[in-house]
Image 1: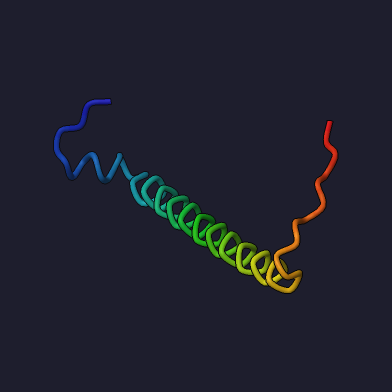
Image 2: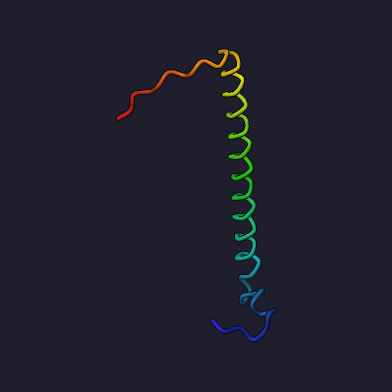
Length: 66
């Protein structure tokens, strides 16, 4: 598509609010997901460290995998 001006590009023939709004919502959701993943990782690491300290540094049993 060829746009006459930057204003026309942002407006996108009247569909601009929907297009840019959906980009905005998607960006917010992706950032929220990344924050939640980081929070879970930090929480899991802290919990694992607590469990390791409670076990006086004993190794966890090895899991036999395929």
